[in-house]
Image (cartoon, rainbow over all chains, first blue to last red):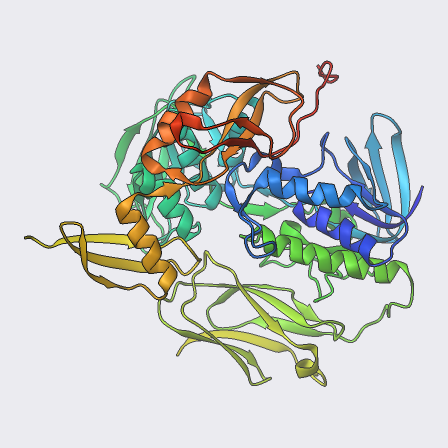
Length: 412
Length: 129
């Protein structure tokens, strides 16, 4: 089988990429989805707050997905459901499998990676204790409640204050469970401020900062957890242990881009974002392979995920049409002072540079963001690690740059 | 009369202003920390009657999935959230349902409708069972 642009994954990034590949003139666009319907994780994110920046409408996850799916249906994009991609080679040959076709290959002129991310689980953080049932990641609990209609437990402790954990604290409370508390190892919350207010404060659910779970107890089912305070090096403080009786522990302890396919294709990954090293066009180190959304770096807003999808789709269409310079001049973009995450990692002088920045530590005072050595500055009222900063540096200001670009956040 | 102090975190935009209010009875004596008019409006609404959009699920038969996601089409008073949830617990819908369809009108006497937030087709039998 042949295609101009093949998009792997149909969450918000993949849907946006497929749409914009079509809008940019690609004739034969193929969208591959391993589940039985389009939309990815949006389908289980039934809360609102999606698309506020992109559409100026407060959608729920399913409504946001329906809007993009409706758009897809008006185009010539073809989609295959129940289709799992099992291999990708650097010459952009995709090997996939589905119940109808068996194992099949697609030779695609360009490829967009949009596989999203997965949750870190108990094994990634090594919580000591027994191994009873009742330990779930927040996203698995979300699927149980919102799609399958099962309540995972009645007395719940949540470890980690990422957005999915906060959303689930509210959701489980509404469905009749008792959420005993949210415990966060850092000394600031992981999720967005509005979620702390609307999901915890509204329901009097306590948030304990600088705390972690140091033991899980229970034989067949969770009977409780031991929580401890941690010091500034995030080490548990002896003597601060406290036993909390519960039947369920939810983990909301971070997301990791899903890059098994990318690795196999020899695409270089960033040790910071854990996603493909990309330019502002979303092209990875392998020509013609583009990457977008949470497989590139974990975003906190769907609007940003979709924006990178649009860029990837548009450029994948350009690549497929030919005339794309394969050996491009590009410079590195390096995280400097108080910058933990920076995306993209390279600039190739094709488009404006849209930078996504996550600061290393919270600063609740006015800050200045310097793009050096270009003498370009931005001012912000604060920098918070749980709120990604988006900046646009116009193409003409970057012309003639030969050295690497550095990004620094300092107090004004 | 004693001055009562209240604290709010504004949720209108991502800045999340920390707003302190001093009240005498129901009169606002002072407000500090609000960076814009929308923050002020938010606090006044919170003082009068906190309003929230409710998103939840209801049971559905004849569809691929057990639950249909729904929402209130307007914010409802926060104090009514659990009452609405309870009313919805007894409801079972039949597929097909279209996104934005009003599933229940005038829930709990609020003049607010419960609407579906996705399409759900009628399915014969789950082919993967």
